[in-house]
Image 1 (cartoon, helix red, strand yellow):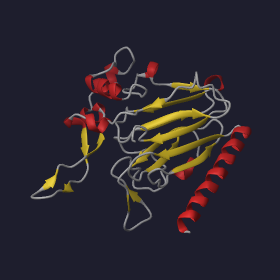
Image 2 (cartoon, one colour; image 1 turned 135 degrees about the vertical axis):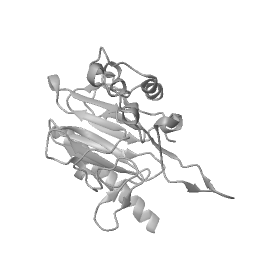
Image 3 (cartoon, helix red, strand yellow; image 1 turned 120 degrees about the vertical axis):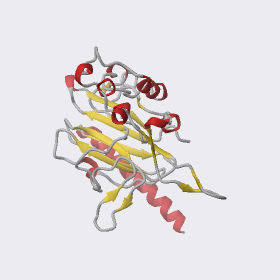
Image 4 (cartoon, helix red, strand yellow; image 1 turned 90 degrees about the horizontal axis):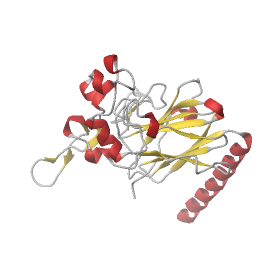
Length: 266
């Protein structure tokens, strides 16, 4: 009976969620739906860039295969990301995360600590269009895919932004951020896993990689061997600061957005 009850509750939640989304479309509100396709729990986080409104409460826990949705006000601008490897702080209500940590807060009011993959949005920008992208400029921790949905969406013009490839598996040693070592059979421990891949800017701090100083414009800051590696793995994501032509997507009014973490995971 317990399994039947849980399945019924999940079905009811799906119906309520669907009705809420359709209601939001009718009211002109943008709804973000977050799906965790990773094999592990994540803690999505949000940060508003132009508003005091903390959409999605600033952050929450999301189990594997689970979904959550929340509205964003008209004209909202901000970013979403996933925190991984989080544990509750023993002496407070905070949260300590291996990647994407926002100064130990459970609900973020600051950005995630690099390296972290970002989904960035500006709703109702120029000509009333939404602008969105997935960025590896601050490095990579998990893949993110962004798809526009809704009855009024023109799918021919609203592109898919994201990073399906596993950059951690391709990350060169000099950019790797390792997690704690795991115990292994026999003597010793297994090599620590790569939990994130740093940007070349974070790793080396030079103007060439950070697009600053003499390299502070699109004509003087081009792709590097590291950004090309990111771009090869994630063609529809920002690989460095001036990667605009192939990385920024737009969609007309009325779109809702599905943000999938680990979109390439099966």
